[in-house]
Image (cartoon, rainbow, N blue to C red):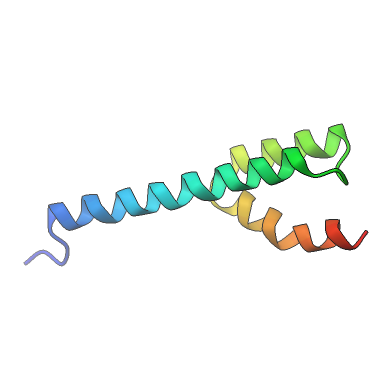
Length: 70
């Protein structure tokens, strides 16, 4: 007996991909609009979010608070 049907599995993957795209685009927008990051840090954060697809944006959002305080 299957735990998840094929249709339900596809829906779960579509939701996961949509969440990832929204998270990724939001992170890149915030990185590019941040006035506190200079060019090397901007490039590093963009590469980090690109190469670490889910973890990179999450780390950026957790570290973003320290950018605003500085």
